Amino acid sequence: MTLLDIKDLSVFYGKTQALFNCSFSVGEGEFVALLGSNGAGKTTLLRAVSGLLPFKGSVSYAGKALDEISAQTRLARGVAHIPQGRGTFTEFTVEENLSLGATIVGSRSQVKEDKERWYETFPRLRERRNQLAGNLSGGEQQMLAVARALMSRPRLLMCDEPSLGLAPSITQEILAIFKSLNKEAGMTLLVVEQNVDTTLQYADIAFVIEAGQVVASGAASDLIGNEDIKKSYLGVA
Ligand SMILES: Nc1ncnc2c1ncn2[C@@H]1O[C@H](COP(=O)(O)OP(=O)(O)O)[C@@H](O)[C@H]1O
Ligand SMILES: [Mg+2]
Image (cartoon, helix red, strand yellow):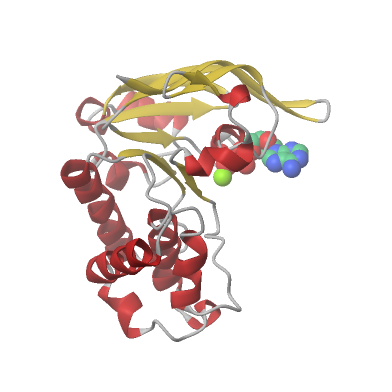
């Protein structure tokens, strides 16, 4: 089943067009990578899907036109977006950040259960549960951003450049967690990355975006070996 269906998506910043008729879809349970060099339009695309930017074209989520689901209720319907730069609340503790992520999830016992689950997944967050998010390392902040998004019990988890500024081993750790959420919990993932080779090791399918257009797509395993695509669009020497 198609969970997210994007057709002819165009986005403008004033008179400047950033996305040009982008079309692709994400099936329920897939781990999809959206790759592209700096300025390609990746962040713009995620922001349009999560309701932060107006767009032209049609986007449907779980069979419903996105226009019919207000930006406020998208989260309640399971669309979670971890922004580029993480967006944790630096003046709040780790634990408070997790609580804030759970605002739409019903009961206290559910929230407690979910925190416990994500502390199991991210033991370093448990150790630092009473520290201010702003005092965590970059890797820990990214983990907190992921855990906070997970507190909303997403069906579609979108993450914008988790690897930005992180050591390769931490990037691998985060992608491995995404992979296990995908395989074990059936969560659908749309991960934006410039870190091509690493991401392709974990994703099932990838779309490549360049200058606001979808220019290539395929099984991640096929793209790993495709030097032409990497040279042409992804700045990989
Ligand atoms: N707030 C903005 N106002 C005007 N142009 C913007 C804004 N944000 C991004 N852009 C432009 O839109 C294009 C796509 O940017 P972005 O989606 O951030 O790319 P990416 O995430 O792939 O690096 C770029 O040309 C960028 O300069
Ligand atoms: Mg970006």
